[in-house]
Length: 298
Ligand code: NAI
Image (cartoon, rainbow, N blue to C red):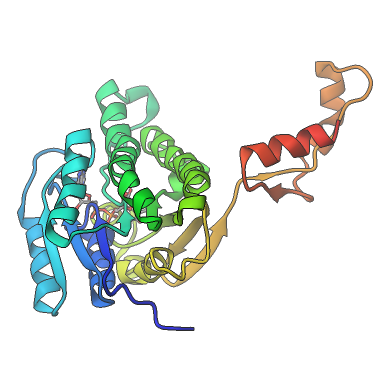
């Protein structure tokens, strides 16, 4: 296969002042992309701000011979997202790639979760991804080309104790990704998501050191680069990635069963093994396809 390059392309990476975002920004820049390194620079909980994080990563890219500018705006407001996109257009004159990666954590069991814990996490992850996509979308549509890579999580795909806020936001990002993929398809825009696992300040207190050492963020970025490239082989998909492991994740629907006689709770209980059976499960490319398949079985 031809080398994956981003010469002449402009990319935004949100939350790129550290962890995974920094690795993505370095990877894209090393392959020729001009990069907007966005980071608010707050704490893991989302408190405060600090320009040093984004500035440092810009320094790393420039020192390696690449092109990058910082953006210190928050992704979680319309104004912040617009300013991130404006930074790309002002500095480099175009926009091709958006990597939505910024995030915070407010882990707490549900019975102790405050409205503020819920809202802060949904605002940064889900609304933040929305705002940046929405600000970038008209430019990608007009150009007839775009690549968006969003960041989900195993917590969203499978649920996780103490992360109801984060899980809800992260699965919301999967729905957003799938819908934008369908809307962008005819305009040359491809939108995919990753569910990564990597060493960062998010994981350093929950995984042991030997495990963390096998989970370098730089092992996630090659997938982000492929999905962000002209050669992007997918649209509307989600991939689990970390430590050199890569796998597609899909929502599947079983073959199910159609009740022809009485439709009652008792009849459902009797049919439960067939309803629950996933052996013939398959994914669908759109809600319309899934609904069509269900109607076709009646
Ligand atoms: P991190 O905390 O190092 O990176 C997140 C970055 O986002 C930080 O630099 C932070 O300053 C920035 N940020 C936070 N709020 C922002 C805002 N409103 N606007 C702009 N920037 C903001 O953590 P990590 O692990 O690198 O996380 C990156 C993404 O990957 C997150 O979306 C996270 O939820 C996701 N993820 C990470 C996993 C892991 O194993 N590290 C697992 C699953 C998902």
